[in-house]
Image 1 (cartoon, rainbow over the protein chains, first blue to last red):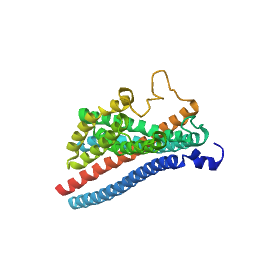
Image 2 (spheres, rainbow over the protein chains, first blue to last red; image 1 turned 90 degrees about the vertical axis):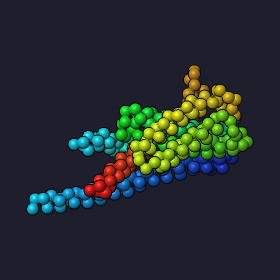
Image 3 (cartoon, rainbow over the protein chains, first blue to last red; image 1 turned 90 degrees about the horizontal axis):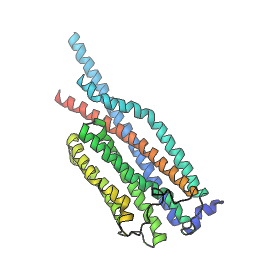
Image 4 (cartoon, rainbow over the protein chains, first blue to last red; image 1 turned 120 degrees about the vertical axis):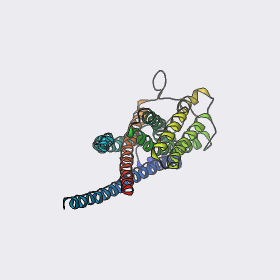
Length: 66
Length: 242
């Protein structure tokens, strides 16, 4: 195919071809973005917990030292 | 020391997979990009199906991935079940939504291809029905993980489900040979080599490789999420106990 209008028209099959690619693109992008966001959120929770855990341990050690 | 040993394997996974992640995602984008260009612009129209044949470049790789991901899920389930490998269960769990997504894409794009070529969106033939069963297997597997509070019991039950469900994989592959289906038989993976011109085979294989790289990238992200979630759970349990 040479021209943009030819590509968009898909020989009259545009209503079948483009939704097929659209569905695939939306599902794959949504899956990737959701997975990434879940990882970032969970990582933040872990860092917060570890920071709390660390500071509590430090406090306990200070008490023991004193 | 015991805790360190327990996390040794997942820690190694985190390190290696983090290094692999940008490469696999980058590879997926490049391969799918080139595959789309060759498939949608360069490849010729089919002499019978016209331009509608271009649905093949997304439908066939998605259908391959649906089977490939399930096979990977069954192998990691078996590894988790037999060797109690801590990351294997999480890889299996993380694969399920990706496999379900590819199966759904295969079903939806197949439907959009079936309407202009067969005159119907859906037909209960052996290939279509067995792929629908695969989709429900993925959904059932994901639901089963949610049904348990104890992750170890969930992993075991899910591993058994995925291994029992694996019987469906060869049924899907050979359904077009064993039964008289409306769906056409294999034209790429078959005895005597592919019956498809290189101008169509190249974008098809590029898209399939791109989808595989995408699977690896999303699998890494999801498995890392599972490993971190397990650590969070362990810390919270320790907090409650102390």
